[in-house]
Amino acid sequence: MTPATRLGPDLAALDRALAALARLFDDAGYEAVSPPHLFPADLMLDLYGEDIRARAFLFPGGGGDEVCLRPDFTVPVVLAHGERGWDRPARYAYQGPVFRRQASGSRRPVEYFQAGIEYLGAADPAEAEAEVLTLTLRGLELLGVAPLRLTTGDLGIVFGLLNALDMPVGRRARLRRHLWRPARFHALVAAAVAGPTEVTARRARLIAAVGAPDPLAQIERLAAGEGEILGLRDIEDIAERAAALAEAAAEPPMPAEQAELIEAVLGVNGPAEGALARLRGLTANAGIGLDRELDAFERRLEALARHGISGSELAFDADFGRNLEYYDGFVFEVSGPDPSLPLAGGGRYDSMTTRLGAGTSVPAIGAMIRPEAALAMRGGR
Amino acid sequence: MGSLTLGLPSKGRLMEATIEWFGARGITIRRSGAGREYAAHAEGIDGLDIVMLSAGEIPRELDRGRIHLGVTGEDLIREKIAGWEHRVKIATAMGFGHADLVVAVPAWWVDVETMADLDEACAQFRARHGTALRIGTKYHALTRDFFRRKGVADYRIVDSQGATEAGPKNQSFEAIVDITSSGETLTANHLRVLSDGMILQSQASLCLSLAADWGAEAVRARDSLGTKLGLALG
View: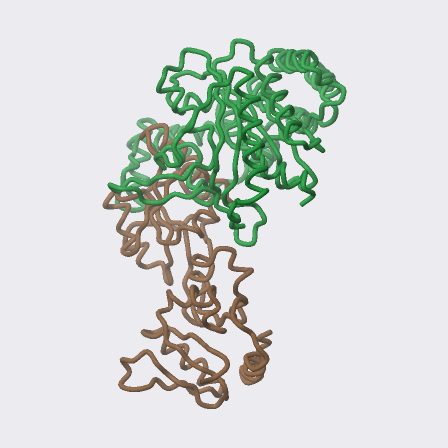
């Protein structure tokens, strides 16, 4: 949907909303930051892969390099923070338009305002999460909307579960890598339970070569038999992957109870307090140590209670957030009548800071409000 | 000036096969002038205007509604029109211009047989070489869509408008997405199609623009063309 020109009472209302949010965030100690609209496309491609081209506007800049029209503020704000130095806590507030490519016929806007915050390097993660969520809800309140639905989740629990479960290293790496692609993830779990399948003759020869004396020479002989050795991927790449394939072929099937536990944990859904109790019960029964993640969940609920949000009312869905790229801990979303057009959302993204150059993972959580969606809802449109 | 505009490919084997196809159904298409002009007319049917266009331009013209009907490859329809299902209706496949759009890797990659293998090879390539594995193609949208459906995430598309099969050897990219009819070119370039790497089995197709102006006269001409062709063009 191409946005209309903003003018008249609509523009005045948007300006008032942005000013109110700027004041709210400023009063809470968030420093205003205004990153450029354009930044290097390489960064986005490295973070999100080619899929980003379907969702953001990438085009040639000067000098042959591609640029990206910002699809959100998180990446540019975190980069700006990194340039000042990663090793100090900081709170940032931003506002401005973002640009998203939408499928033809989609009702989602191509350009819309975001007003949001990022909180980096917080010493107390639970307190930071409660602060960011509370500020987001207060922001929506200032805009005059009563959020109809707040959903929360915690990807840290699933990551923690995968780490805690006893399974072959290769299988764990595969599951972790596909956590954000639920369909692929469930297929991997099912395949792991089913155990080894019949392999092609080529695969059988390759696996046999790994076990032979001088496997590298064996694999090279097999490879050269299929075609000229060309390209940038080299024989060591192939030998390394062959070893991983041989290892995977020897993996014992995943015990059915383990798969059931993974699916049961992902299926936990309901008021947060009860969800926490259910997760404690599930993992205790299975003898799995998930204390670190569940204690973090509990501390978050305590912090939220201090901010006036009750864990017996807060909605929690363990599966929530798995389609939201880059989040790896607490996640939340506020929606109005149309769940496909959220009013606000946010989450924890510690591991992304590593990929953006922090060297090590820095505590990071952020949230954004979509003032135009909120105003449209208030106006009954 | 007719009331229904049909865009046809203006040269090569695709043009000849298209003219034969209509001829076999009682519609004779004659090129005007000395064969260099991109103009033609149809005999055997009333109210039909023919415009000769490059096959690659026909999807765009259909998308913009500047022609009512057009003949082009299904691969080009799907590649060039975002949300093509809402813009164009494929009335019939025409039985020629067959081309498979496939994912192919160097044949010597004995560890990569499926898209799932390619996905793991991508992750490994990033870890060992520090950059994303590159796929050379001119079919950017179809590649992205297929790779997403297959759960392949960490790769980069490199635009390649011709001689794509030679790219891996030149180290311009590691693997390719390209059309092939017999697979001979791929084999000659030491490439192998992945076992689940068939993206699309394309052929020349008669397509309807949903964006064109379908006034009463255009609908009348369309229906009489449909009757002649023995097709439901609605």
